[in-house]
Length: 79
Image 1: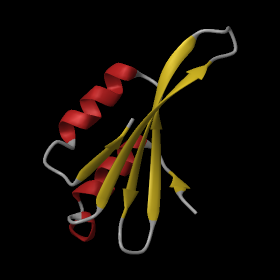
Image 2 (image 1 turned 60 degrees about the vertical axis):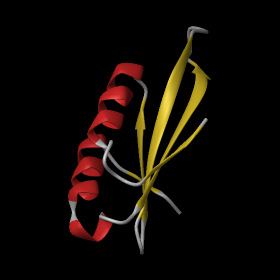
Image 3 (image 1 turned 120 degrees about the vertical axis):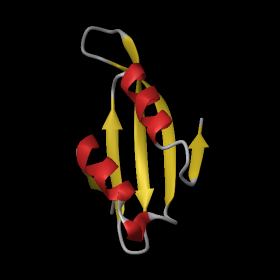
Image 4 (image 1 turned 135 degrees about the horizontal axis):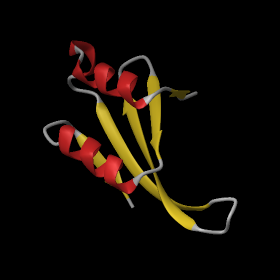
């Protein structure tokens, strides 16, 4: 079962040595908020040898910044 964590913790885990060859999956979904407006929700999933972690970002700008930070990692993007 994936463990939901904050974005800051997620980025710290990505930098650690044991996650150096781990797979990072990025998935973007369209969601509808309580007011009926649509927005994009981006999930960043880190699969290491023992655990799976998930960080969820609702802002498209913030998601783009995180993608830029993770540019040199092993990333699989699902659309």
